[in-house]
Length: 88
Image (cartoon, rainbow, N blue to C red; front, side, top):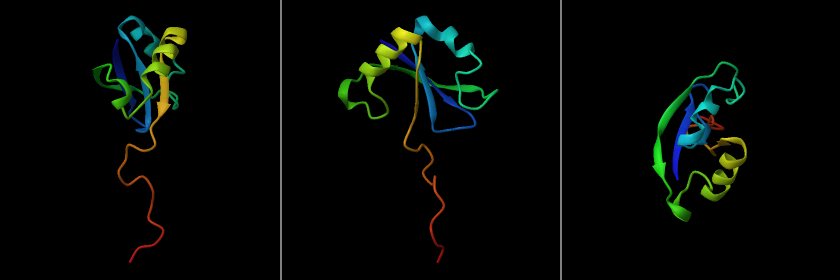
């Protein structure tokens, strides 16, 4: 399976994964967490097995089969996601 990965433009930690047969699911208005948010294509990736760090491929495949997509929040995509507790 080739995974088509999309990222929300507003919530950079939110991703949607689907496959070639279910790309039309991206047109659903409630697919992203922010109303009216536009999804940006990250790329198309083949299966990598357990070495994939971003998401569980087997879980994603079952979700895509059942509902046409798999959504998830990454732990953080932004290298400075949190404000430091104190500044020097």
